Image (cartoon, rainbow, N blue to C red; front, side):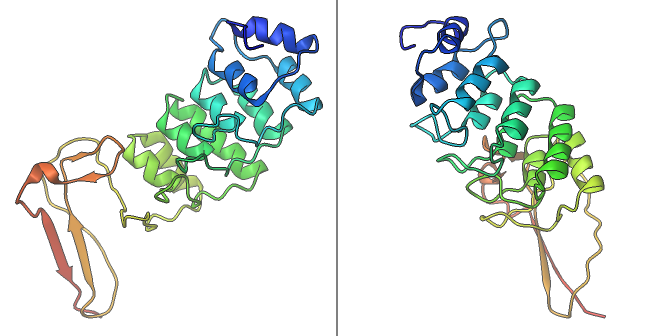
Amino acid sequence: LQLATNSDIMQILIQNGAKAQSEDIAKLFTIATEEQPVSLETLRILLKSDQWYPDNPVYTSNGDTALHLSIRYNYKPEIFYFLLFEAKCDPNIKNVYGETLVHLLITNWVSESKIVITIKDLMMTRQWDPNSSCNSIDDTALHLAAKFHKPEVVQFLLSETKCDLNIRNKIGETVMDLGQNMVGWVRMKVNGKAGDQVTLQFAEVLDKEGNFYTTNLRAAEATDIYTLKGG
C-alpha cells in the first residue's frame, strides 16, 4: 500500500486482503480524485475488519478523522453519508485545530445547497445542535456562515433552526457581515434596564480567518455606544 501511487491500486489491494495502517487510510482519501474516488466497497471492507475505526484520527499532523478527510478531499455525498450514518462517525469531533465537520462544510468549497441538506440531516438523524461550537474559538454554524459569505445557509439557520442570533464566540464576536462595504446608518431595537450600554463597532473587511478586523482603520474608532434609558 505504501508503494501505491493512485486510489484505484490501493483499493484493489485492500479488497484483496492487504492490511491497511492509519497512514494508508489517510493516503486513500488524500490521493483520491474525481476519476478515482474512494469506493464504498473499500470502506465497507475496512469497516468490517479490525484495521479501521472511523472516528480515530488518521492524520497524525492535524488529527483529522475520516469524516474530516471526506470533506477536505473530493467531497462525495455518498462517501460522506456512509461515514456519517453507516459508520456512525461523530460529527462533533474536533481535530487539533478545533475544527468540526460543520466548520469544514462551511469553510471549504461545498455548495450552499449541500451544506443546508447536510445540516438538516444532522439535526434530524443525529440530533445535532445548531448552537454547538464548531471550532477553537467557539464559532457556531451561524458565525461561520456569516463570516464566509453563505447567505443561503444564514437564511436557513435563522428560519428553520433554533440557532441563537446572540451567541458570542470566545473573542466576543457576533458578526453581522453585509458582504460588501456599505455607507449608511444602523437602526436597531433593544430592550434593557436604564444604564445598560450597547456597543456597535464597524469594520470594512474581515481578516483571512473571517474575523472582525479594524487595523486598517488606524486611529478611527468607528464605534457607537448607546446607553439605554430604561422603560
